[in-house]
Image 1 (cartoon, rainbow, N blue to C red):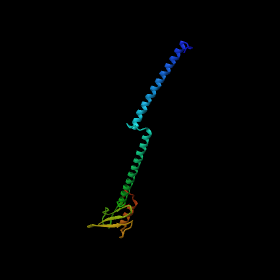
Image 2: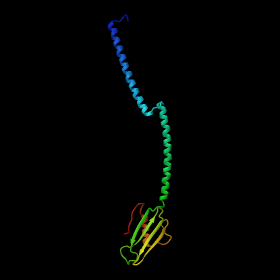
Image 3: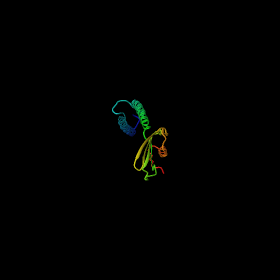
Image 4: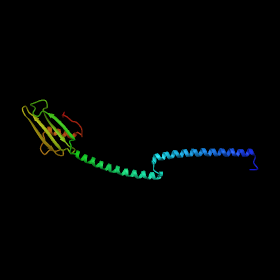
Length: 175
């Protein structure tokens, strides 16, 4: 540097030192960011030494296995729901109570008919006919809305009332 003056050389040295300090600061920032990325990566990957792509592939494989397991659970649950619904088909879902005076010799609607029917409108009609000194109990079968034995008009009305109700509905005395 024989042709440069001492002030020019000093200026170049100061600029080189400034560039070196800037490079050190940039390297420090880069190392800090790298440490933060590695910390975040270790939060995702754990302590394993695999790279992010291998970890993503492992996660995808685990997700597929979990998805298959959930499909199996859903299929078993559907089968159980269908079995439960099949069992409920024979449960009483339609019912009605009809109170009346059978022989018009007593008041207070002492006689009554109760219809207990399933979703296929099959079940029984239970009637209790009260007279002044006796009470008689009758049970009649109903199959698909029809009875093998002729029903009384009150029993027919009770079956009609029960068929008009939905599952869980309440019905009472006919007007």
